[in-house]
Length: 304
Image 1 (cartoon, rainbow, N blue to C red):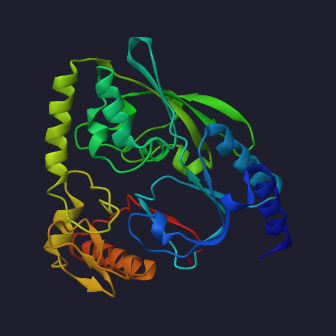
Image 2 (cartoon, rainbow, N blue to C red; image 1 turned 135 degrees about the vertical axis):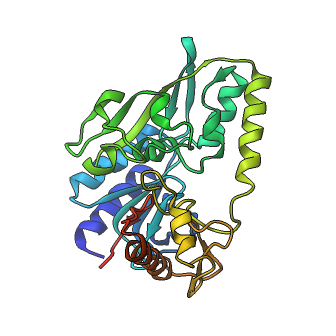
Image 3 (cartoon, one colour; image 1 turned 90 degrees about the vertical axis):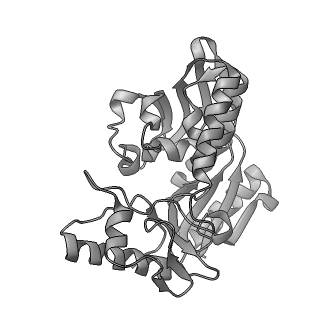
C-alpha cells in the first residue's frame, strides 16, 4: 500500500471508525456477477453526508474513488480496484406534495417502488424489477422496454470532480438509451428527485406483480442482467443466438441457454472468463452481421 493510501486509510478510520474501513476487501461478494478482485480500501456509507465526506477525503489525498451500489451492472477486474471503493447504502426516501419523491442515491429501486405504492404514488412501478440503486439507475438511464428513469426524473444533486455539490436538471443530463452524462463526467449522484402521479395502491401493486412475473422468466444464477444494449431495430440476444453461442462456456462463465444476452456465473468464474465471453460474442456478431454490439455493463478496476 502506498503512503498516500495509508494516510487516507487513517483519515477514514478517524472519521468513520477503524472497523468500517477494510483493506483488500473482495469485491466479488458485493457484485451480482460474484466475480472480481479486491478493493485497496473499502468503506460502507449509510448517509449522503458520509458519502460526500468519503469522496472529499479521497480527492484530498489524490486517490481515485469508485462508488458501488449493488454492483448489478458492473464487471470488476480480477486485479481489483485501486484507491477507495465506497459501498453506497444511503437509502433515505422522502415524499413531498404533488407526488414528488426524494431518494438518496443508494436507495434500492425495488424498495423505492414499494414505498411509493404505499404512499399512493404511481408511475414508479417499473423500478420494481430493476436490480440496483437510484444513483446507478440515473447514470445508466435504467429501465424497461417501455419506461426508463429519464421519464420520471426531475433533477439530481451530484458531487463533482471539483469537490463541489450542485444540482442538475433532467435537461442537463444528456439522457439517451442506457446512457447519461453521469457515465462520462466523473460526477457522482447524491440524491434524485422523481415525479410520480396519484394512483390507487391496489392498482400499483397489481402492475408491480405483473412486472415481477415477467422477471421470473429471466435466467437464474449470478449475472448482471443484459450484457449488451439492443442495437437499433434488433435485439442483442437474437443476434448472439443466431451466431450459435447459446450455452457457450469459458471457464466458469456461460452464455445463458435461456437468453443469449445474459452471461451467468456457474460457480468460480473469473472476471476474465466473463470478459472473454463478451469479446467472443461481440466478435461473432460483428463478423456475421456487421453489427458492433455495445456493452450495457460497465468495466471497473484495473483492466489491461
